[in-house]
Image 1 (cartoon, one colour):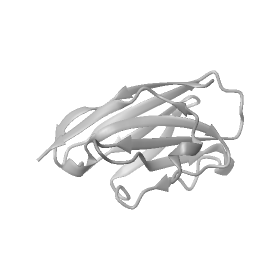
Image 2 (image 1 turned 60 degrees about the vertical axis):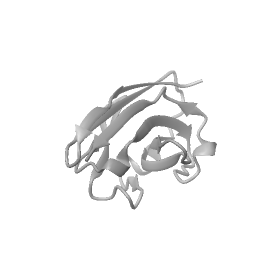
Image 3 (image 1 turned 45 degrees about the vertical axis):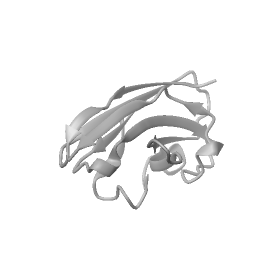
Image 4 (image 1 turned 60 degrees about the horizontal axis):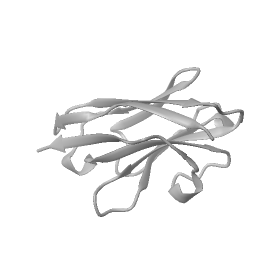
Length: 125
């Protein structure tokens, strides 16, 4: 079982920025997907960004709602970040990092079997 350690999150006013970080531990797969998902109260979990070794970390995935505002990146050999800029109140949610061997399907969170504990992001208007 892959363990994921998340950090970051917090509260910010609309228009502000936050940075989330994720470190997967204990994996052996060389081809894998790292996804950032979020879940707001009363809503389904949705994929917001993803990156994979299958493309050499190129061509990341972004949900339409975050394109141009969020950036997923590989910071170190084993740390992945989600930079969130121009935050909106509707971005308020618990954000989760997830790991899954390829193929990647960020629109299907049920496929991802390893999850971080979640970190709260609150954006006030």
